[in-house]
Image (tube, rainbow over all chains, first blue to last red):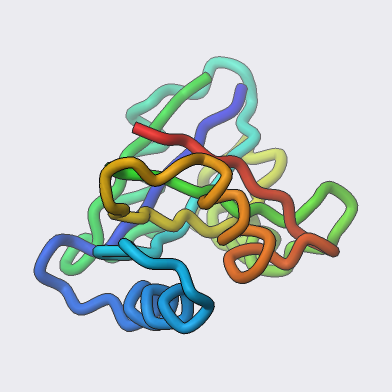
Amino acid sequence: MKARVHVMLKNGVLDPQGEAVRHALGALGFDGVEGVRQGKVIELDLAEGSSEATVTEMCEKLLANTVIESYTIELG
Amino acid sequence: MKARVHVMLKNGVLDPQGEAVRHALGALGFDGVEGVRQGKVIELDLAEGSSEATVTEMCEKLLANTVIESYTIELG
């Protein structure tokens, strides 16, 4: 089975990568870019029968720094 | 309007970050992790009326290195 985890910086945490992308898009002539946030996406290929609880544990222990990052899990 | 862009390394391109995550999950005792790919997710906050074609152009020009990376766009 596949699982996809999105890890984003929490709101209020400064996102210099996103800010750099926003600035670069403006410099390239793209108007109307009001905000950019950049995060990570991790695609896991898991053994059949793995549960969402296992993926949550992976996020808490390794994939996300829960002090400054939030995560969402999609199974499918 | 919001747009979300996923940028992943193409299949066949070595993904050392994903490989490091896979190894670390194994070391933490998570069995059955058969593969991990890590990519980027970029959330764009755009002016109303922006088109998917504009976001595609952003991907081609800046957000993805199309030689080694593929991208998908979700509007919403």
